[in-house]
Length: 352
Image 1 (tube, rainbow, N blue to C red):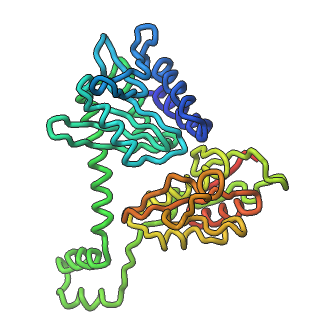
Image 2 (cartoon, rainbow, N blue to C red):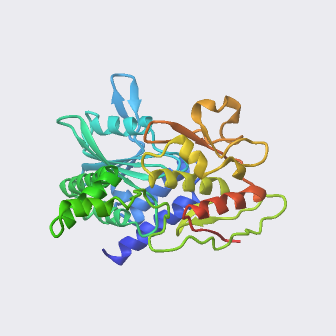
Image 3 (cartoon, rainbow, N blue to C red):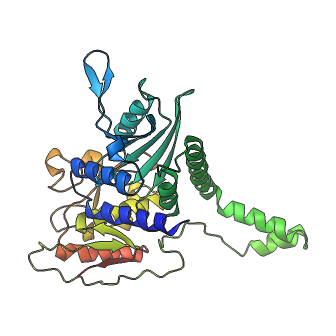
């Protein structure tokens, strides 16, 4: 892949962290600049169509964030949210409604929030394929996106093939992981050895072995987990502006860093339960007197939402359990959290 695509993607990653808590109108301006300065669409030719009004009946209307076009033909649509928000059903439904609008009928869409999601919408059967791309440095999927969505390269069929192929690969990885078991390992070993030895001999030999099949918690392939700055020198007031990096990814301040770590842990441990998540991130790492690091969504009271104690947008587990993450992080407890995360394989450093 071209070096410029790598540099361009990594710029998006860095600015995703920089603008993590910024309002949506700033994200809008940011992406309009991306499409102009990086992807090659020209504002002077109206190829970056922002806030176009799509009418529904005589009075109601919908307003997509950005529609990209070339030579008078609409190519794809982009729906933008605050970077601190996680994807939910409402965000997806909003984008798909735009894509299926009678004035557009677009097959390719992008949803941007805490992660980036590429959609291919098949209008003939009203089904869609979705590919998740985290904002991570040197992410190969992100780099490929920079290539595919440049004005001179964009092609609906090529983009569709990319989305379908990569989303299938991700789904297949999950299926393979689910099939890995102690029984499978024993059966494979038996099949291997009975080619040479008597079956009774093989079974007798394997009786002395036990096989534990569990996914590694270490997030860094081939690298040990080390906190580069385990004693972050915060001021006593806690009103510092320390910026963190997790496994090489800029994650912003204390609160977004905690959420990033927990969400990454959930993603890399498919099937994890709420109890297992709470065991991985124990209550002791929370600010004294403010309860848990994670809490079931239904247990959170209205007065505990954003700016008080918990993020309003939950992390959703594979069993559909919704988990709220604490926003109560100060110098005296963020180091505890970093130590807990290090044991799980996260490499966390700060700029202080």
